[in-house]
Length: 291
Image (cartoon, rainbow, N blue to C red; front, top):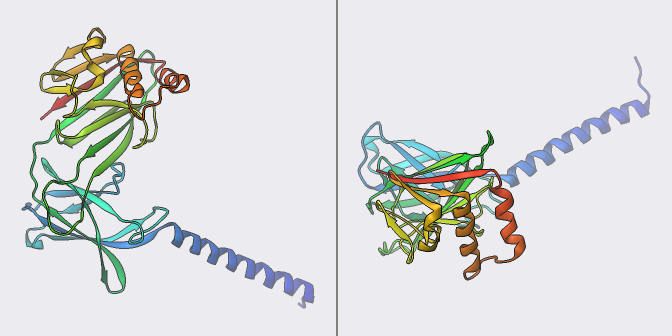
């Protein structure tokens, strides 16, 4: 069977276009993510069967897991990790923190290394033990709906000089539905900001300061110190429960109003109505701390 020149040209053009599109898609995918090896040097003992949890770039919703091996000499590898940020390591610094049993690390920045031509993000973590607890957030609604619960947790840069200028502040976040369990929290040294109604945490956005060492006017109840949420003026909107506090919707709204009125807060009518709309069906919020 003979084909016309037009048919042959059309077939070749279609084949070329298909190939070009494939190459373009591969190129776009390569730009969207960069493959890295992760090297972790841990100056803290761990036992076989333990699992090291690694949180990169503050994203607690997508942790990595490493099994602990006694013959590791404290060096652990993640052989394949994809940097999906708009700007990639090493052009964009990469931070991380570890969790192991009842311990969590400070945040550290990676140092660039190479292994067989592949970029390596190399971390060192030190045994900076501090007491940790589990913070639980539970919302109750007036109907069967579930309120998005986002949080932002901050830990100051380690005060210990490790001699490499790689220590950094922790800003970590996650979002859940209806409730949240914030594990291995350095209570009360950590600052935990609760953002009710948001499906994605916003580290730069307003929220409810759950607890903090800097809660000057906060109410200290059962070792749970909450900031403006339980300012003594709002005590009637707060109920003490085992291990923590229960806040009514009015208590949450008034606490957010106080938060917005402070330096860099959004005290506009628009800002205030945003909270009211998000919390329309909220009945109560319980905040408890467990060992």
